[in-house]
Image 1 (cartoon, rainbow, N blue to C red):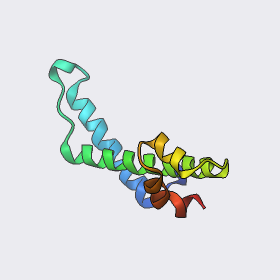
Image 2: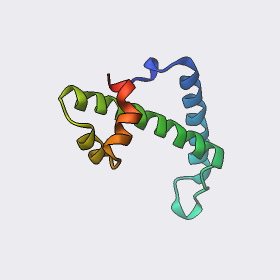
Image 3: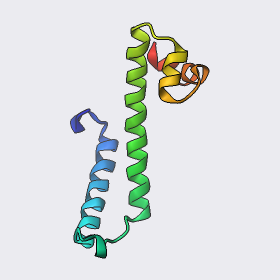
Image 4: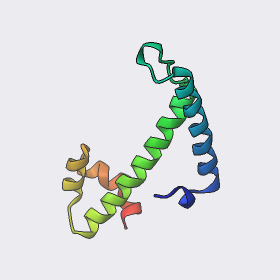
Length: 95
C-alpha cells in the first residue's frame, strides 16, 4: 500500500506519527544507554496504525485463500483462530 493511496485523514495521522517518532529518535540520540521511552500516545497511535494495516493485509490474504478454494477451517487454523471465527470476521470482505 502506498501513502498516496491512503485517505487524507490517515495520511495526516501517519504524518503526525512520523514527526512524533522523529522527535523521539532525536531526543534519544540513538544511544541505548540514554534512550528516551516512546511517548505513550505516540506508541498507541503507532500500534493502532499497525493493527489497521495488519487487518487489511489479513483480509486480503483471506480473500485470496477463499478464491483458491481453501476452507474456513484451514484459513482460521493458519491465522490461529477457529474456522467459524474466520468466517464471521472475514466472510463479507472476502466475497
